[in-house]
Structure formats: C-alpha cells, structure tokens
Length: 401
Image (cartoon, rainbow, N blue to C red; front, side, top):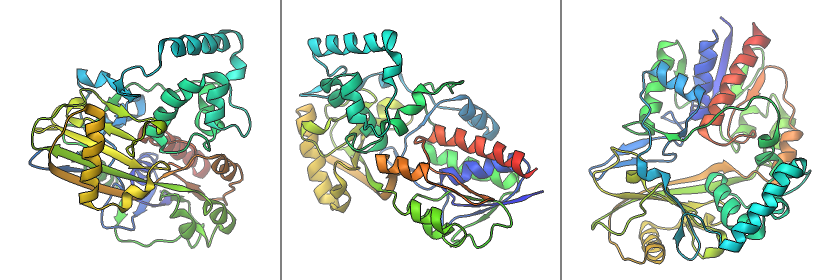
C-alpha cells in the first residue's frame, strides 16, 4: 500500500485519514497535542451536556454515509429548533419592517428573474457591498450580516463576496444540505467513534508529535490550523508557507451557562445579534431546545469573539458572568442567576475570509506530494470540510495509484 502521512488530528485530519485509508492508503496520523478532535468535544456535567465548540453538523449524504459506517444514529433537532431569532430592538423571527421587506422582495425578485447574472459577486467585492447592490441596507444589516457573522465571525465590510457567496452561483451538481444533526452523547461521541474506526482501518496514530514535513518522497496531507501550517511546511514549500503566514485568524469564545432558577428562555434554536444593536455577543444557542438529551437543566451557549469582540477572550470568569447576565437582561428583560459556567477559549479558531484571504488562495502553489486540508481553503463548516476531504482522498487515489 502507498503510504500517506497526515499531519493534524483535528476534524479535518481525522476525516481525511478516514477517507485515505478507505481508498487503500497506509496512513500515519500525527497530532501535536495529547488528544484528537481539535475544537470538537463534549463534557457531560451534572446539569447537562456541554459542547466545547460546534453543537452539530449540517446533514448531507456524505455525513449520513459516514454515520452509517461508524454505526452512529444521527440525532435530529426537536420541533422547537425551527424557531430562530435575530435581535432588532427585541428578539424577532423576521427583523425587517413591512416596507423594508417589500423593498427587499421587489428588488431581489426582479434580479432573480430578470437580471440573474448581476447577482454574481464581482471581483474584489465585499459581502457588504454585494448586499447593498443586490438586497438593501436593512437586509444587509439585519439578515446577511448577522447570518454570516454567526458562521464566519468576520466583518462583512472586509469579507470577500466571491469567496463566501461565489459557490452559490457555480454550475454543476450541488450537494444538498438539510438541517442540523448531532449525537445523543454529543460531538465528542463522533470523535471517539471515528478514532476507533481509524484504528480498525490500520491508521497509525501518533500523539504529542511535533511532526514537520522534511521530505516529499511520499504524499503528505497537512491538516492543521491556518496559523500552524507555515511552520509545518516551511522546509519543503517556503513560498507557500510565506503566503499562508499572511492569513488572518479570528478568535472565538464559547461559554455554556446553566441557571439556578428557570429563567425566561430563548425558546428556539438561538439568536443572532446585528453589529449595531450594542451587544458583545455574536450569537446565543439554546442546546436544550435544539436537541433532546441535553439537560436536565436549561442551558445557553454564548458565542463571543471574531472581529466584533476579540477582547472577550481576555475576560475573567467573573467578568464573563457579569457581561452575560447584563446582556441577557437586555435581551429577555428578566434577571437570572448563574448556577454553572463552562468556558472554552479558542484564540485561533477561524480564518477571516477577507479580500486579502481570497488573493492568498489564488496565489497558493504547492509542490508535488503536498496537500492541504482545513477550514481556510474556501469552505467553512464541518460537513463541507468532510465532503472536501472525501474528494481530496479520491483525487490522491487517482494521482498515486
């Protein structure tokens, strides 16, 4: 069997190793830390389940196939999860006013049916400018902005419309994504099951390994974070390392809170907060409303950081408690007392998909036998990274068979 070395044992590295071993490669996987899974993990506390980062996957055919192979049963959302809120002077299912909605519908439908080509992002166009051109100022501020902020944690005035929205306008068969799924025991259960599967497929796993690519006599897939890639590949791909060194990486802070009293609740999937509404939080999730088996106590997961509030990662636990309670009182109009809090800071969580990032990817050239995997390569979201890893493994089989 042809040997392949995978560097990085986070989500990207694990699923890449899985697909490569399925394609018949002998895989060695190196992880710098003492654990696998990267940001993903779950903790079962006396109050309920806590996720260290993502609370679920966007479902697709590739994910369903993987779950089936791992013997996992996807946990679907509860009925409450259909409700999603955006804050605009209060929690609202639809934050636009009547005439704003009418103006948006008129403009967008005209373009959709009579000028569809104009919807495509133009070169060097930011998402903010794309929104003004194709939607409206209010739709950009209260729909597009918070929606993408919840996924990318970035600034739409700097983010690339071509990079983020461009794939929506590409031809060919598109993968179908259909709702969020998780597991009864959380995302950590997925990591554990996948690691067990890799062992049965003969993948050799090396923890606490400070592996650097010294030679490309055999294929390597580097699946570490954007900020870690340059030091791993600098000896074999100095120009690519120099380009990747320029990538801006955003911090994210996940804080899950349980309350002493049953407070007024966010009765749905969660809420997003437009930049002009005066909050530090990017979004709040309601895990006990999204999935069953997340209690027994009601919890909320507060997401901070990104370009909006990076300073939140420097706050102490007492400061975070104070900020959460103050913002919660403004959101729901009721006080509460925190019973338990779980804080997960990720200083280098997400790439900032800016116009500069777009140029970095365009100028990126890799030597033979060196491949990259990760959320900085044009796709963000676990399921999209999963599908990209599957395609990469197929490509490598064709190249190295």
